[in-house]
Image (cartoon, rainbow, N blue to C red; front, side, top):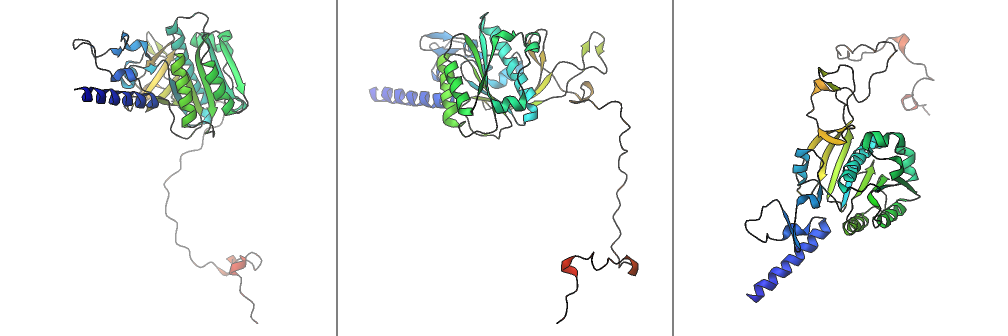
Length: 330
């Protein structure tokens, strides 16, 4: 009996180490204290805590179910933009999540630190201060921006800033696949977020997929906006709330999913939209005040086989390619 108990302790310790490396919650590995305890609760050694203590619900029921409760509060979350021109969509989703985090933390003076390199700020631009308060409920003076000369400096700033109590969330925005952003660096950043108990968002623009320690990776692309909804129905020719397409590239549950999310700037909540072609407008509207576009091409017929050209159609000696000119004899 003693040997089996020791073996169970060793196995449990190994499972805890694996869970920490993978970024999952080791508390899920423990058995419930009582058999009658609800299965939806997470058990800790010092008591019982609900899933809301560990996860941030996005408000989209289907997305939260696929993620296993929402985004982890004290962890590294990767928001992946495949192209630089999609930087606005990826940054917009990051600000949506930050708005939800600030609403959940209930700290009036909490700050948000946005870290990036000069390269990414030059390519993707800076957050527009005048729209932060209206769109996301984030006062401009609560957003701090740090410009680092190199990606390694940006990661160092993020690790140190995660310790500051006045900062509620940290956003690290990087472009491409820098050499310093490897599995070891992201594991260190994820560990710092866990120790500090606050979220760190890794916002990656125009990057190729590569392994990171973030337990959740969201792939973000722009989505066509829907028509503005009124009491009488959709308003023709209008543009509704901003929308993004979010695909789960990595999560604790390993469940795939793709969602069209809309941000309600009045209520500051995320909503899922069941996409339909008749209730959306193009991402970029057609240009106005120009001539009609060219007509569509007609039926394409096969060309006739080449025939010997007439004597007058032969190219001159100077026009012939060098490799086709006759060789001199002798």
